[in-house]
Image (cartoon, rainbow, N blue to C red; front, top):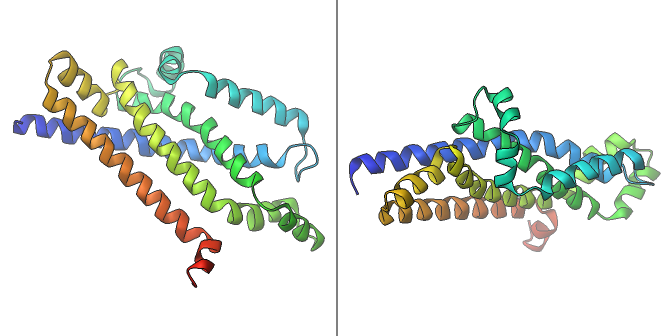
Length: 224
């Protein structure tokens, strides 16, 4: 493989990492509070608001039900409005974020709902406010599950970032299509696949390691 192609692979890898990191951070900033509210606003919960819960749930489900490649095309006017263009890595962050936020919201909601209800009742009995229960009981207890869920979200974003290459999103997907497919260069395609596999494996291993360190039950089993 020529030095020029190696440089292209390096640039494409950095573009992919840029898209995934930025959309992951913004998606978490939107999805985390939304997921907390969805978990706490069900009937009889800390912030009980069933009507609003159902409305937000419908929006989240609607966004999650649209296939990503269709979402990318359908929101091109919105992407152009936000990013000033519909092509390139910065533009690709818009659909990636819209795909990540509802996914993360459901992950956070599920992790919080798995927290032992006895802990919530105990906190209530001690006079803790809903905000204190969320901040000091629900989030710390659900943190390992949230970290594993965010790991899954980032892995999905890596796959999505390759898809946006088909519509001018740049990154490894774009390189694989232009050189590996259209110019029939199997070595480039193989290199793109290997880099994507390495990225996914690195994210998965890192996420699992962090989740284990945050899980106090696992820490007790290790005698820490």
